Image (cartoon, rainbow, N blue to C red):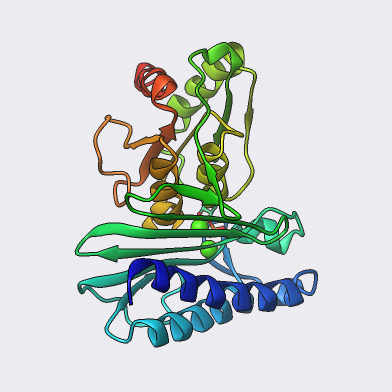
Length: 263
Ligand code: IPD
Ligand code: CA
Ligand code: CA
């Protein structure tokens, strides 16, 4: 199977899992919500979706291993590794806010080669294969070619459990509030990255993220002509827990603002 065939098979699997998730939407009661750690929520929907994805993707590539948010399978290392967030935007899902996605990436020898983010409520499928461009519902997408911070719409994720950098973060927000068109917090990092990839947002930044939040969206953003960095301007955005991505014209500005906000 080549990567295109693997991607097509993975999309079919993801669409089946999406049907399951949407069947459960609106049915979640308080007793279904488990707290993994402060404000980090999970339900049977996240776990079942993950199991369905693991089973489906294992059938496509029997020798592959997994890195998944909900730990429903042994986490492995190997040549081909799927990095999965079965439901990115769990808090939105629980509260019936219609922004959440399935995020699936495939790594080959440590390099992300496939990214798929499926936003369930707008039926938007974002895809990329390394070196092959990025697509929204099969139409090629590009980051916005905007040079002016004053015209930029910026996405972020507000800290909700790790408050160590909160003062710096708020200084960054203040500067961006005063110098851009505005800031959005959608509640799904995967969607934030894809909205940046297709030019709806100019840039996205967040700290305390995990690899499954950013693996697929990061590749999609890069393949759409964007740049993805950690806050130091390095390339450790997958495991480094800090990510800033956007069009190349503005990303340096965003990184400078983040770093100048550090006391
Ligand atoms: C969360 C979402 C959210 C981000 C959090 C993530 P989850 O993922 O991506 O936008 O701010 O940091 O943990 O828990 O809904 O899969
Ligand atoms: Ca997530
Ligand atoms: Ca999740």
